[in-house]
Length: 440
Image (cartoon, rainbow, N blue to C red; front, side, top):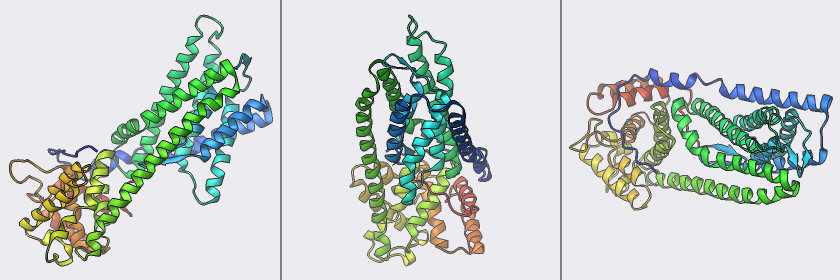
């Protein structure tokens, strides 16, 4: 994990943060509408006008897409992927011959077959109450549609039997990169809208998160199309097996991440069970901290550290002989706050893998201008300090007068104790119906 050690940040008002994500709020419905239109139009055209060419080939790829969609997985960050379905659909779009036999299907047929395959693969999930993330499903559908409608006309300009046959390979690679980049931008727009954070931040996060699996799927699709070009449909099984193994590895990684977060959440409840803090305090502070972090444009890795630190920020209270009344550390003396933070940090460092989180917890008690020669505390620590103080004074109350009174109290202490930028971001988060939540 990266260490969130940002210090000097420009002063801004809270109202300037949210506008950066609202500009892309139309992306998800637009993508879903475009995917539905592409699927419906292709199906109608293929069924009523052109018919399904080469049924055996159509059935083979349709089954692969359906199986791959059925085996879809959700990665950390709430990203839904279907590597087998995506690679199979893209390779179907890239086909130009099969063992020397010309391919007759059009780009519209590709879209129609992939749409049917995806629908069949999703049906079992929907029947047991696990609907897909419609935005991600629409993106997968549109990526294949763009590839099919771009590649078919362009590859017709290449003499596949001449000395420039390699241009078809270059064309495939260029299309894969362009479609992957466009898909990442679309995913970033959806994510920025969902998390209410900055679009430019989610673009970087999506590029980093999807580059490995995106390039692996694209390369597999190209290799599958080229192998079918030489040896026929039987080679599909050779390439599907490694993709299935990769998918199992990703699924295991996602499960480990979920288990890790569940463990941290369970550990954070020890202080509640022991009566050191009010019930639900750690989860409320974590949700508020994540909302503030998104508002201030923290990256995905920084938000993950912030979530862990916010959940465990009070774990040092377990060392107290006499609990603080209601667990409200905001009412404790600076010496007590420092002791709680240091002991909590020491406990977290014992894990050996959460040093960044331990540092955020250690410096959470410090005023935002800093305490000593170390300079201002990291942004994550300043966020936890504000979120913790707010929840200590408000708790689970929804009384707007009380919320406004506490906000005014925090603003009065922004000259030294609380970061004014963080306090204004908190005010922006509290104006929403529900505080932003980051995906597990």
